[in-house]
Length: 416
Image (tube, rainbow, N blue to C red; front, top):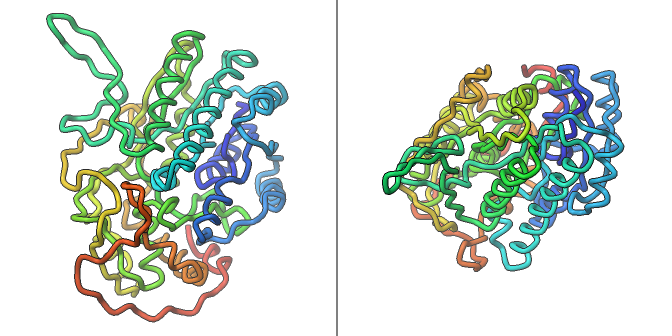
């Protein structure tokens, strides 16, 4: 199958391109390197060393025996998107090319407006290119479980059946976004659903949980194939941030009470699920929704697992609560469905503790890169529009001394 990965230079995109190619698909990628720019804007960098795209493409060819066609440019540019589609003629499009951070979108009006323009324009351009160039193709669109918010009822996969005043209908489940970023994903879902209805396109909308991990098997021991690993307050998810903090001996910082519940999935399982969606397309005109996560944890449970995995490898992990810079429920009901991918064959690859041990060993080797941007771990972006560092809600603890950093390649040979 000919598959276009939009956002191929990113955390998910680079790993997915390798996994799909290893399975025999012909893959092309598009990107404008904006993720690199956004992270640099925040004074941070990837914990794992990331090569230039020219080096990545060369490593891709050497390891997989295939070229990765690469299109550099902005998905918000309609002419560019049309040219990519006319040249490559994709049978499937995996759309990962959006700004993916709630905190980044909440910095100020400029960042909120940019997030809406970037995300909505890019998705609309892809939909129109599908209609005009390859209407039989399949769009796998990355949404987020954050679209649903935290309702006090079970969360279905996209749709639910409701009876009202004696009549019954199946309708989209209400979305309750809590950031300008999440609101763009809600708008995307509505736009994609309408395009499928009007133009008989086919799409799978992936409501993905929080992804964690440093590697997938396809990367082997070639460090040029590593995907990025962000740990800053905007692009580092809670679990990735916890692991980075553990690796450098900093306390894990829980926002508020730490009762916030979310779905989590390892990187290697995320690419497995995205591949399953690509290889099992819906019929023409169908818009379907998959909730993609492996298990639900609250943030306190998550930190405890990172501590356990870290303590097992001698990291002596500490946990502390800090002010919550977000406006969110910290104690709430949360029970989302996730049956569709399991029915199609998704099988979790390993337990969370096993994945965390791999992550922590990788990040301990890369700890010098985290130490160099240590201040990026501590949040100061608040949902009220101010920029003030959060304060600890408990007594300080003693931090451990850093260990010696060794080349990443040495670890890659030992890890599975």
